[in-house]
Image (cartoon, rainbow, N blue to C red; front, side, top):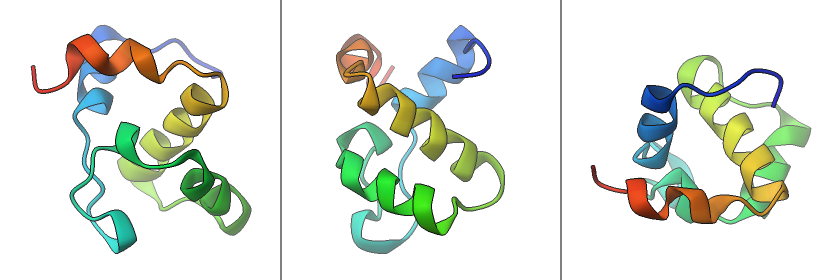
Length: 74
């Protein structure tokens, strides 16, 4: 990731839910990496959702999803 995540952003990312599509209402961290890879080829949505999806792709690519375990639903 090109910039460092603040604690507040990281906490929000841990609890961010997909607002549409096949994975509606799933936490981003629960969505398979392949879904984010598809968006990386087609283009991420604009705004906060797109930024969070890109962050999640980088986190999943590097096997760091476990960092979210203590933060879910806090």
